[in-house]
Amino acid sequence: MATYTADIDVRFRDIDAMGHVNNAVYATYIEQARTRFFRDVLDLDISGASTVLASLSIDFRRPVELDDDAVVVSVEIADLGRSSATMTHEIRIGDAVAAEAEATLVAVDPETGEPTPIPEAHREAMASYRDR
Image (cartoon, rainbow, N blue to C red):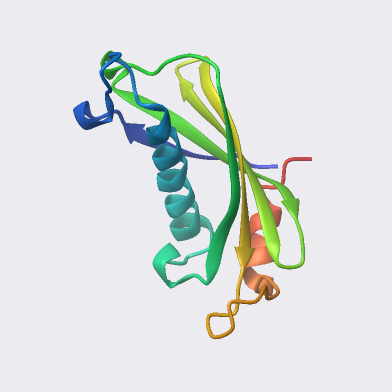
């Protein structure tokens, strides 16, 4: 099993009045990693993919601060269904886990909006990142 990772810079605009990265920004970090995963693993621009985010949950472990410079977001496939893929993520600062997350994406028919099977080539590429 492989783990896909993306390094993401912590920007000044990510910081809230408490002096750490705002909790909503963690979802953006995960989205950035997912976008890169689609590009690098599936050879697909996510804006051209017919997928919707069905769910996202984040468990916060420690704050991320501006001095942290960058975070590393991992992507693994926890479950690969007929039309959905559940991804697990860790947001790390060095060896410390800042957050753990799970996101479920559903492939949809762009004309009807109904779930549709994940294309076989994408399924095969995602399978190598499956968390077993």
